[in-house]
Image (cartoon, rainbow, N blue to C red; front, side, top):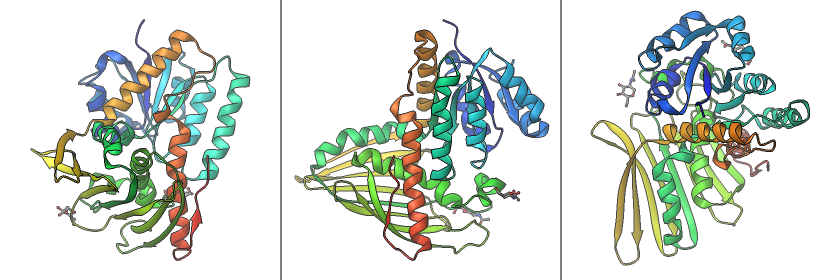
Length: 358
Ligand SMILES: *[C@@H]1O[C@H](CO)[C@@H](O)[C@H](O)[C@H]1NC(C)=O
Ligand SMILES: *[C@@H]1O[C@H](CO)[C@@H](O)[C@H](O)[C@H]1NC(C)=O
């Protein structure tokens, strides 16, 4: 069977520095037909980079370019990597035209938005011969280190407590600082980045978050508010822990520690030989430490999974096909729900807020 033909909507920093290089590692799984952006200049910037790997990729821009992609029946799947304010609307537009969509996280800019979008998406099963796949790209769910951590969780026994501490220096030297949409997005970087850490927490704990109590602050006024948060998180199983994130600062540190009755699991982001990855350590009662290291690979793995799911859906012509659970909108929405509760609690000086259930 011929691999699916795809298009990318978006030509920003993440497309240029992540999507295109990662797609170039798996060129047999798809055919990249077009890259689209709102403006011609921006679309050309990404197309020039992509041409090195995909010489036949076409450049599309503006409303006309978008319509061409929508009307091109040979394009069966689209990767949506746009400003978070616009992603859901565009994803729905593509889904209505019958195309499968992999949309970047966050799943939506709010729970209200995702609820409305899900009901339009679900109604497509009545208007289209088959419901296309709407998948959310949360690369942390595909990181080999996080999957290894999940495998090791039974070794720590009953979970007692967890700490997830994040320092991510976001200043004008960071390429993501210059993306204007993040500065005009309710929840700012705390929502945009925070969903990753919630995804890891939910995956490792194997349990949903029920309520949060958080304090937020705004220290660096060149960043959108809030730029820092300290949250106490309560899980469905009654256990609790903390999730802390600060954007102003000088060091990068992403630290996860899960304390259990039989041992402790720690996962840290580390730079080895100029490349980022995770160090995974298991500490047990007898003083033994098990340590392993995994370079970042989540984006490649998630793209591979999406293309496999699309190929399967095409082959089987299955009318009720559902995306792989790790790609599902529901999972992405649950991450957003936790951050939304954190932001609400922060606005109410730490009041306990129940997390919206999906
Ligand atoms: C910021 O977002 C609002 C609402 O989403 C929009 O109306 C406004 O034009 C945006 N401003 C900038 C500078 O992008
Ligand atoms: C931003 O933070 C990085 C990491 O600490 C640092 O190397 C760089 O000098 C900072 N840039 C500015 C403009 O402060």
